[in-house]
Length: 193
Image (cartoon, rainbow, N blue to C red; front, side, top):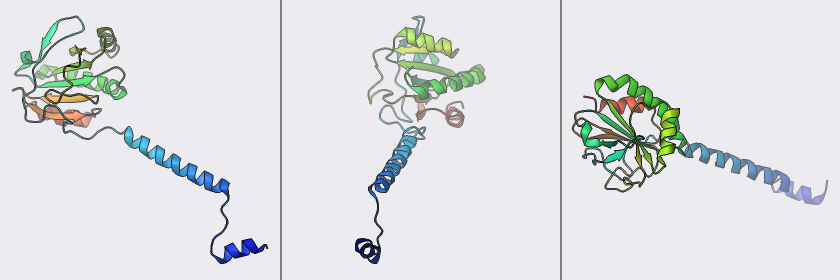
């Protein structure tokens, strides 16, 4: 045995090859990157507004065109529970929750539920295509100018964002990120009474 190996063994360390060190570092990087990616794509459980109108405040009024150019005014739904869902076609979680919202609307529209899907900044043709593709029967509205993107309004800077508004026009819940059936049902209970 060479004297170098004997000297290293006496100090309690075995030689680590460059290849072993490289693969150990690579494995650590993959694990860290995988964990970060997993966390990044988890649905948000945060139900507090990240800017914008807050829970307990009056919902800001608006008038927007639907896919056919008809003007829809939020105030015309006073006396009904209203869910406002901000979405865009490039947002995968938005697309994933469209069938959930449509099914929920079909279940509860007889009790007066109103759902308004507000498309953020896209051409009406894209909005119409998505409404047809997902067979949406609730009104889908166009916010072409991003008029809600301020702290004084709904501020849907991150999509999807959903507001739950009671019959008196007061925001009772805000959901940031993709809705789950449990969150949708729980937040609907806050506005349906």
